[in-house]
Length: 434
Ligand SMILES: *Cc1c(COP(=O)(O)O)cnc(C)c1O
Image 1: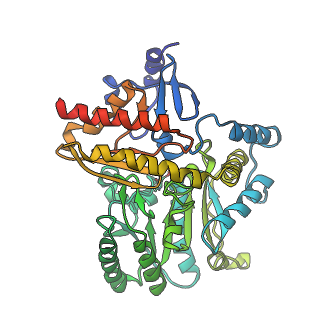
Image 2: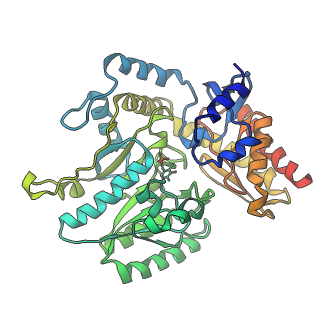
Image 3: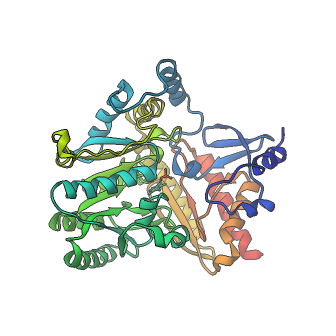
């Protein structure tokens, strides 16, 4: 069976995420038959470098033998079990490990099965914690240009118009404070001042501040200085506001350190993890929090303070086995150290892009790099044209508007980095000429 036939069968029934389905009248939908390492292969044998880690989830390549093996082993014993009243060894082990490697004090793990749900959990827990302590604080603060997922609560604290504006009337209460406008320290302090003004005025109403530490990925790979996180921590402490670090995209080494918060030496009250948690294999998410927050819910049943949130697939053992395999790889293979060399290599190669006349800025934080174009209106859909160019040349680039970015699996080698960047470079050059 070829690509086209599968595409038509798909389009007869399937509604895809984040897609204007009419685009597929001209844009081919690509059925993927298999993956190996950084490559994905379609049904006609064409290979594509997965430069976006399949929506930022993959860490150690597709069909990674070490992860496959751990999932297979787990499959022989237990595929799933209800997680209320029951538990299993993979999740106990995973929780012990996560509490050890995350910033200090994050000692309690609450599981869910996708990133948006983790954000919902953190928001609800924060609100509920204040309530259990006798204070009702119905407002959340997030940063301008932020993205935290697309369920109603998560969408409410996001600020990407494209996803949010339509639903304005049905969102929960949130306000945005400015994100630092660039990576300078000055910009971080300036934004922190604005946050301070807001907190001073409205702290009585605010349960939590939610941030994406260092990189707002869905927000066009916008990056800022770590000192902003430090300031946010100080202000949250001063005004009895929880700090939620949404490390769903940046966690597990993406920014160069295991977690982005480490670069500010900050421990949040809640940390949301998903995406890379299972190396891109299975849906799993976790919210880590502190003992003092856990304790605000811990009492006799009849005081009705328990956190009753639940998802059917909470703590799925196969997902936990994958997550443990991912942590094994981090432990045994010096991943973060090896990535430093790749980060450096990518950084050098990015210099070429700066010379192109339609490039506005090149930026990088760890294993995340972005090239921002200038001079195009949204209607031109310049990103789409570069996406199509990439596909024709064997690289999956999926620009965010006019921002071309690279977030490859960590197993990418120099030759593959060369091909990924060279293809993007030619793609960008190509849209100058036309
Ligand atoms: C992807 C993402 C989410 C949402 O996760 P899903 O699993 O897609 O629901 C939340 N926050 C950030 C920062 C993300 O990048």
